[in-house]
Image 1 (cartoon, rainbow, N blue to C red):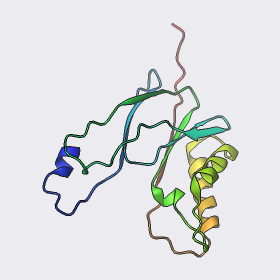
Image 2: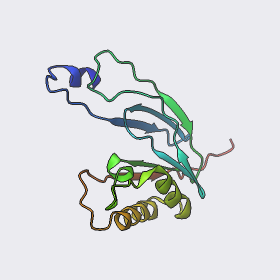
Image 3: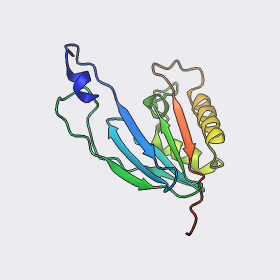
Image 4: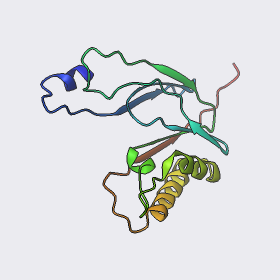
Length: 151
């Protein structure tokens, strides 16, 4: 994808990408990040940023080697992905919603995808008030529900 985006790119366009593959049997999340915001990992009432190697967006440099990382998810763990329209949403004083508020909302919300997205959307819209935003707000949450057998 990086090579395709780099070719004939006279305007310097790029795209941030988080690509993850979750093995539904083992719970192993294999992922790579091309300049996108790191997702949040939510376990019970704990939330933190998923560790992501520093990288550049796709389309910036031909030949760039993106790294693949792994994270072991356990039953009930959720991963919350979002565009920068969430953390960079501003109030009427141009203060951003920010990662710390996101983490706080995730910690105070039941660890299920739908309630997590609804709470995050409600919180950020309340924070923004009537302030017009210049970016999209996209969120995705998935929860690993498989229980590994002890065979």
